[in-house]
Amino acid sequence: MQAMCSFIGVLDSGAASLSQEALLVLREAKYVIAGHRLLHTLADDIAQAKHYDLTGQLKQVPDWINAALARNEAVAVLATGDPLCHGIAGFLVDKLDPNRVRILPNLSTIQLAFAELKLSWQSAKIVSVHSRDTGEWTRGAMSNHGLYELAQRCRQQDLLAILTSPDNTAARIARLLQIEGLANVFEMAIAEALKQQEQRVSAWLTIAEVAQNTYRDPNVVILKRKTAVPTPVLFGVSDDRFQQRKPEKGLITKREVRAVSLARMQLTRSSIIWDIGAGSGSVGLEAARLCPDGHVFSVEKNADDIANVAQNQATWGISNYSFVHGKAPQCLDTWPDPDAVFIGGSGGELAELIALCLGRLRPAGWLVMNFVTLENLSAAVDTLKQLGADWDVCQIQASRSSPILKMHRLQAENPVWIVSATNPLQPITSGHDEH
Image (tube, rainbow, N blue to C red; front, side, top):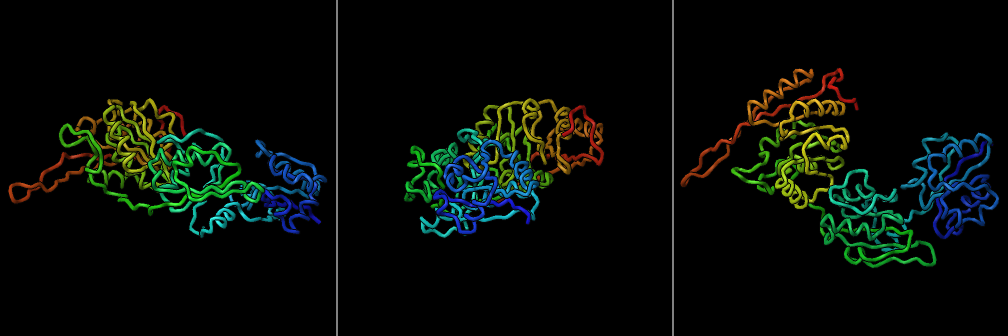
């Protein structure tokens, strides 16, 4: 009979939480793999086996398992709750022979938390922040931050269940909500030390209360909205919704031009976007709403405009948007390769920027540029020709109704050329590393 690798869900009450089948499998295992806490909790029930502490050694676990199975020796891998719900089994199963894997799930700590709160949870979004510590949340943090997904989901969900860690605590989550302007939108409950003698499940608390407190680990955080998720306009937002610098008509990409430019960028829910020369941030912020699972990276050299970008981001409540005060291309090497690039201002480095952006575009990505001068249009087209890009030009000339006495007339906006370009089938040689 072939020995098996069994993933066993365990609660903090230890052996008392296991079924007879799971307990028998555990006691017959020759090797037990788990984190330090579960190895300690079940020490009396796994005394017959060799122990492997997987803390900090997750990449080695498949080799440990496969080596034992090659000797036809049974392995038990322990996980808290359901091993397939943000658990180790989800990571390991694809790396093992599926015919020699068995899953013995337990109740998840999320189920237990909702049961204690007597709250239906079928609509809850589960988010794990049980990752490496990347510090406190800051507005505009990028996707490598341990709380990034949570910040995104808080914008989209009414009910969230959060698996915390010793670093990403309930208090840190509360401070994220304060930074994102959501402190008055949610209330929070914390389920501490479930199935232990010290178990405690709080009442619904304000975010301010939680932000200054500490809670026993491990714990589960439940976030519940007090107001429904807003349904803002996603596309074609009015110009006057943006804080902007106004020497005349406002330094902003007008709605009609913005709509065509965004359409030409061919965005998806998960697009990575560069916004170069952000101005008021209108294009990038609207793109961020259209790409809730993506991210916008924005740069602007004018300090007054950067202040407006910050204000607009806060007012709009956008978490998947980062901006820097600087002049491209200085900061672009720190950004991930884009699916789309928008250039609204080049600061005199147009040819270099075009070459760099086309060289960094992901497959099927688009570079979209707006110009109001013949000189910049000519420079852009010449550069695209030299690089062998696929490109086209569209001119937008919009007129808006304007009152005159008791009647209305059409008042023309400045014409804008929209230049769209993508890589041809063969890679572009531009002197930059391929990505």
